[in-house]
Image (cartoon, rainbow, N blue to C red; front, side, top):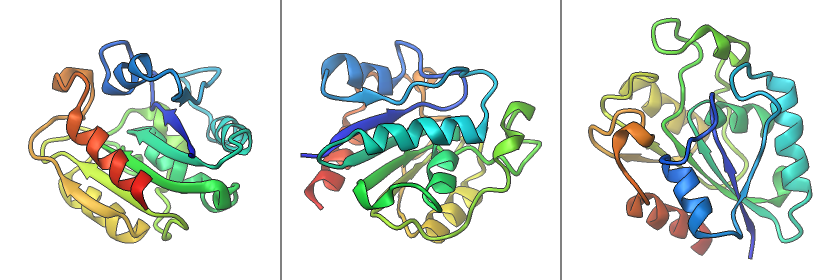
Amino acid sequence: MPRVLVIPGLGGSGPAHWQSVWEAADPALRRVEQDDWDHPDPAAWALRLEAAVAASPSGALLVAHSLACVLVARWAAAGSVGKVGGALLVAPADVDSDRHTPPETRAFAPVPLSPLPFPSILVASADDPYCAAERARLFARSWGARLVEAGALGHINADSGLGDWPEGRRLLGDLRAK
């Protein structure tokens, strides 16, 4: 069974975020920790992701949120992608947009638009303040991801009030089944 790696975005995921709720409920999930959640460095973050994937003996499934979706797309160009069975990419941040994302994320621009070498599902919200719906659709098409339009859920984070987010767990189950 592949290890599930939880990859938060800018600021990390606080205790009420669905990623943290999942981790608390399932100790087998592993968070990819970063040295500095508030001042992201693309190279440092990619090294941490690479180390986590490499340390997963039976391969890995990636569960990325926000800026971490862009991290996964950047890392996929040179990382140990053969060990990745799939990725659940939730609420990608549009780091190319000054209007949608904070300056701390600019170092991750441009958003790579190459197909991912593993199955992926991109979950987008109709009213995400960090990524317009049409940009999320472009990312899904470019990355070869199955697009799930989740309705108006904001940034699909703690403020969205999702708790355990059963729909996200179902989508992760879809990836596990592949």
